[in-house]
Length: 285
Image (tube, rainbow, N blue to C red; front, side, top):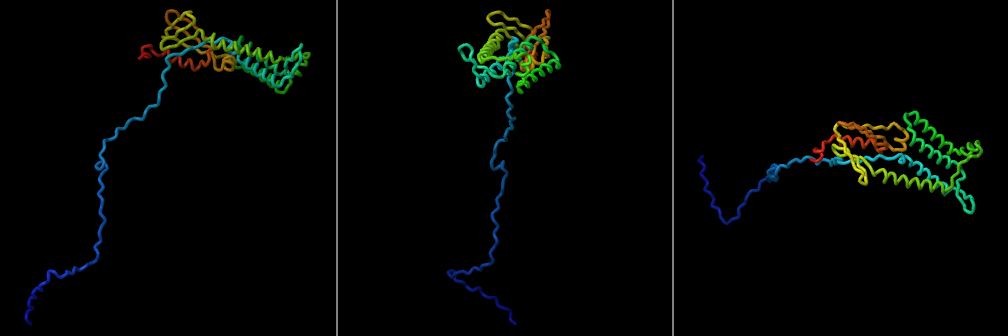
């Protein structure tokens, strides 16, 4: 068998259409996105951590005035109760003809009894020192009994045992007495008692008197403060947290200074202790 002869290539027409075989579709992969670090994409300076803002601190007290009040400051229940009784007499009172005028009276003697006992206790407490818990409880019990007897309306019957010696005040008596007491209390509290006071500054305590009466300063080095609040009714109930302040000075001449009837004495002594503990040069810096 003769060997196969090589086949000659068939000349193709260059202008003839070429047939390209089509195979199965090639699966294409989606383009991948290369993620770069954020520092490379958006370079920015490192943030500086700042501490949170501190809350506003209260400014230190540079000055303190301490007023010594008279005993009249404890008389506020008298004009307060008198004003209430005047209102009750005006609304629930009955007219009574005296002379040629009509005067308003309340038919019950409870109002007069409560007002007179309020006046009596105000005089007693402001002139007699009630010390100790036992004395305070006795006075508190007396006030409670007075209010209970007035609530049940028994004062008229009790006073009838003494020959009908009842207590009745007309509208004018309640009004004018309570009004004059209120005016006197306001003048004493806001004018007279403020004419002289104690001014406390860092490292110094000065007694200041108005109208050029002069002043006197005390060094606070070694100064001692004492608070006296033994009177239950005067200091706690009528005085609303008042007390007596005693200042003991040091140095060549020791002095004992009494400042009576200081309102809100607890808070003022705390502030005063902070002020006298500060040196004057430290306070000015």
